[in-house]
Amino acid sequence: MKRILVLLSVCALFGTISCSHKEEEKEEEKEYSVTSPLLRDTTITNNYVCQIRSIQHIELRALEKGYLQKIFVDEGQYVKKGQLMFQILPVQYQAELQKAEAEANFANVEFRNTKQLADSNIVSKNELALSKAKLDKAKAEVSLAQVHLGFTEVRAPFDGIMDHFQVRLGSLVDEGDLLTTLSDNSKMWVYFNVPEAEYLNYKTHAQQENLNSVNLLMANQQLFKYPGVVQTVEADFNNETGNIAFRATFPNPNSLLRHGETGNIQMTLPMKNAMIIPQKATFEVLEKKYVYVITKDNKIQSREITIAAEMPHIFVVGSGLKKDDKILLEGLRQVKENEKIAYKYQQPASVIANLGLYAE
Image (cartoon, rainbow, N blue to C red; front, side, top):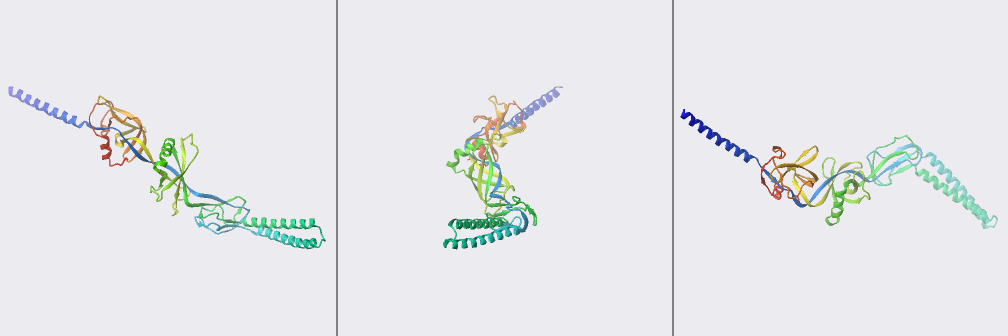
């Protein structure tokens, strides 16, 4: 009986030692990494949805009524300034020109005869002046007829690329009817909207840090080869959106960009004393960002933060944190609200450096 009791005591002792080892191991497993926000001057690259427009994009319309007799170009064709594109049936206007020229010739003959008579004092100077006025009027009618006849020819006002036809050969077109559109794509104007706070950052530092240069990320997620320059900022903010429109000009030597395309403008802006934290230290609830803050008694408390900017692997915090706050770096899914934890503090600069980032 005594032997049995001794054996039970030994087993209980080993069990207690074993349990204490497991508890120690368990406690060791609960030591979490903790860090603080890093304050640093940095630059961020913001993306803005943009609309791409030709530097010149116009509608070509019929200047006279008539049947579309000839089309000298094709859709999507590159045309040169002054190149003949459309011909509206000119028969009526040719007849009007011939009539006006005939009347001008008659008026000219009449004027010469009257001048000879006036030189011989056979007719008065007033009659000569009247004859001269008739000749001038006839010449004006010729010029007007020539203008009308010229309106039957539609020529390219500048070098550019044609869009699709709005009419077909033989169509009856009225004065002002749309024939096609023409785009000058040698340069492109790219429009994008910038929030007020970012506009203020840009205007404050644009001149000192040469921030006028921007890049264009095209719809296929490829970066456009040539950088653009911000040349225009509109006068007023949109009160509904809180944005202001920027316009950047991009060279387009290979005509890759076309009117109506979309993309994203990438603009680099400076941030002074930016508060940087790793993205992995955050979690999301109902589209809001949170971090776990360590209280003075080593308890976990969630806190909502706002994000001022996002870069690979890091966030720039807009509000919600102070520089001395301690935040949970890892194991966010393993803790509960108000749980007391053991932690190991890591210096913020070391944490950011280990992310392999350049936050400067």
